[in-house]
Image (cartoon, rainbow, N blue to C red; front, side, top):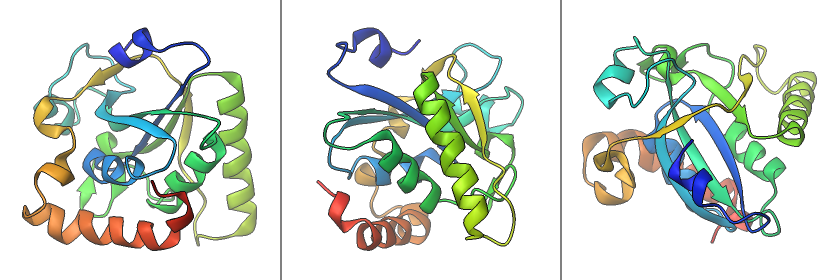
Length: 187
């Protein structure tokens, strides 16, 4: 259980946990949303306790790079977070997002309660039926178990490293596209 989950005040906020490739990209997107209190990059879905970035990126731990989002449901709903999640990564590629390849980059929704599970299943079904992508969605929907916060150097990576090559070439264009599409959701 993460510190975020332990310290949460009941009824004041909720958690959402998503894996959609590189957590640097996902964090840069979700932290810009109105109603989002915080976004932590970390690891979940594997079998090793307190894994390091090096261990996770080796693919040997079973963990995925994920973001854990604390949000106020009165300001942004879980369904809206799912909409952003599915529209800002490719949910049809198994264990891959762009040049990032391996199980640590898989697309997954880790639900915290039955309502989140149901909403995620409904969104996936509707998106598949709509035929938005030429291939079916491969995002897995799994119960949340444990979240391990990534090292401090990975937190707010895009904001702290705007001139770094990966930030310029991969993250910045993704964030700019997101800001155009979801301008009504921004802080």
